[in-house]
Amino acid sequence: MTNQISIHTDKLTKKFGDFTAVDAITFDVYKGEIFGFLGANGAGKTTAMRMLTGLSKPTSGKAIVAGYDVYSHPEEVKKRIGYMSQKFSLYTDLKVKENIEFYGGIYGLTKSEIKIESDRLLERLGFADEANTMVSELPLGWKQKLAFSISLIHKPDIVFLDEPTGGVDPVTRRQFWQMIYEAADEGYTIFVTTHYMDEAEYCHRVAIMVDGKIKAIGTPTELKTEYKADNMDSVFYQLARNAIRSDN
Amino acid sequence: MHQFIAFVRKEVYHILRDRKTLLVLIGMPIIQIILFGFAMSNEVKNTTVYVLDQSKDNLSQKLIEEVNASRYFDIIGTLDDTNQPDEVLRSGKAKLALIIPPSFSSDLQHGNDATIQLITDGSNPNLAATINTYIAAITRDFRNNNLGEFKLPYTINIAVRMLYNPQLKGAYTFVPGVIAMVLMIICVLMTSVSIVKEKELGNMEMLLVSPTNPLVVIISKAVPYFILSLIIISIILIMSTYILNIPIRGSILLLYAVASIFIIAALSLGLVISTLTNSQQVAMMISLMGMMLPTIMFGGFMFPIENMPLPLQFISNIVPAKWFYYCINDIMIKGLGWKAVWQEVTILLGFAILFITISFKKFDIRLT
Image (cartoon, rainbow over all chains, first blue to last red; front, side):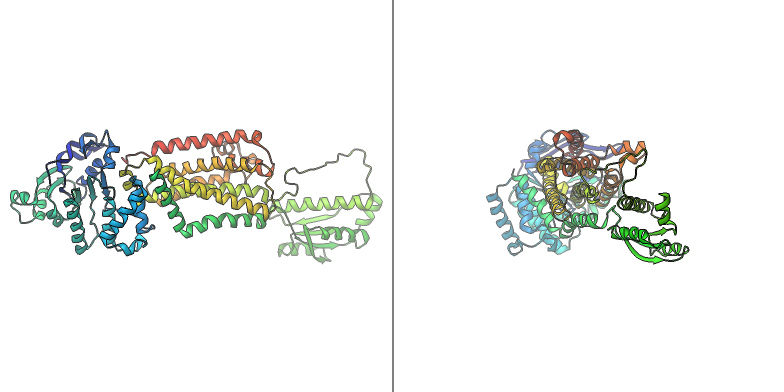
């Protein structure tokens, strides 16, 4: 982790009519940091992420991602970010190798670059034998590891992970987080949304969103001390208890 | 360029891997051509006939033979009672009962004026009318052959020549129709469904987060279907030439050029539909009900537009398939050239530009 800022937002706001999905959030994420974005469903974390990745226009406020304003220079931002969504983003009717080639291709890698990256990626994942397997035949955990690796294929500054471990068993989740740590060690900035509180413990810093606002931000240890809690679950409960927008 | 190639390759994989859909796409026109070419025809062939010959002489026998000799009629039995025609028609054994009265020959020879009676199954009015026309023609020939030319005081002879399709083969209208319909299905339905599928599975977000220009996404979706459409047109044309014996009279180049414009219009229409919905089912429904139905209704190859009430004729003008059908008909069947079809081509071009504009506008780089 360094003091170099990867993501900076200033009163970033998104309104849908009268409804304020994201309400003037301001925060910084540093290079090489694993930044967790926590919140119940409907708290606004997906909307916030969509604004940071250029999928959604902010109503007001500013977001600087990888050194560029998302609103005025979306193309520069897009080259420097990777993305993996909760909805599975690989093509199941394509082979593992073909998926890698495709995503390499859309990020403008040349044929030889794709070849090198693809071999390295498969080796790292231990998927060398699966290069010609249809993605539909892979177990879910494998698919997610592959999707994560592919989101790094163009060596972005920042990777956005939208609830990446949804529906995965605890063992695979741990392995997945191992990969996230390795990526952060290599200098990638990781911005991850989740509603698993145990995953929040793995993050370097977390922001907790309630009703479109950031209610707390800090390292898991800081937050636990501040809220006199044993774990993040309890911190989250204290903050989200009074939420207007929630599933419960 | 790397992006574009990567995209097109991916689309080709999608199409080739989905064997069932591919089989349907290629099988459908083949089956339709065979069906329309052989089974569905407006011609009336081998109509079953019962004869009640009360005259029983040379002349009546000759008439019956001439009817039987025609490929349109098969005499399958004779009757001997005036009540029987009713029975054979009701039981469905015959479509036509031909009754020659006892005085047929004598009336013809002495009075120059004889009557025969036709009882037809009117439950299918078109069929009955066609049968009557055929019999009338046979009896006219019979009269001329056997009794010599009549010298009536005033006669108007109608010399009929059916241009372009002298045998009045049904397939002549259906082949261009099948081309229009199949292109509509492949281009509109397949494009809209394949794009909406990406949205439904969440892949579209991944693509929009990438630096890919949305135009590249759109165009690379369209290219494989464009090529597939041209392949299918070629299959239809080859089948119609060699199996149905319908020659392509006009310029093949012009035919493909017009088809390309129509394909582009249809592909962009599919894109427009894909921007309206996020569900594959809805996209399919809109494409089928909203596009296929008007194509069949107002395309001009199933129901003649000239016979429709004015408001419907007006509506038919906004159906691109109608203009395409007119073009293909002119080029393929009539063998006309650019001068004859430029108006239709211009209208198709207008549709294409309109749909392209709408789809590019709506397919925004940001989702919300």
